[in-house]
Length: 176
Image (cartoon, rainbow, N blue to C red; front, side, top):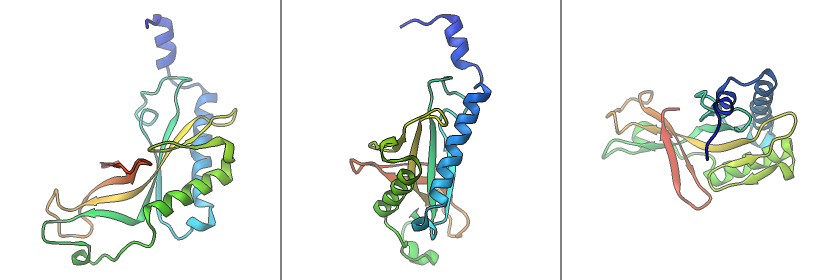
């Protein structure tokens, strides 16, 4: 399919003030939904945008915003050969990934409504309306890789995320 130069320039131009506000509304609403949900109050999380929007390569008026909700109070680790979590002084986490994802879904449904939420293989989709844009939300656990850099120090690791797709595929990436 061929596009005109004008179409391509329009798509790649910066977001309008209205579009930018709708994106900001989306991010804010997701953060408020999760941080204000009582059943997640014991969880420490980092919530951040990722993907084309944050890299400023989104297609204007045809994009969603990708949000990661990374649990940091429970994490997955990769340790030096012969070492395990106990050797670093860690104990088992307080919540399973399945339970965490379920709570995130409940929080988003409480905020956006059941009809606005659909569960994809790797993310939770939030349908746009006049106030906010489409969003893809990925609930993830922090991933700490001590092995790659040979670290035996608690604070020295390569950070990433780890999550499980609906089809049980293990997903993730290093350094957000």
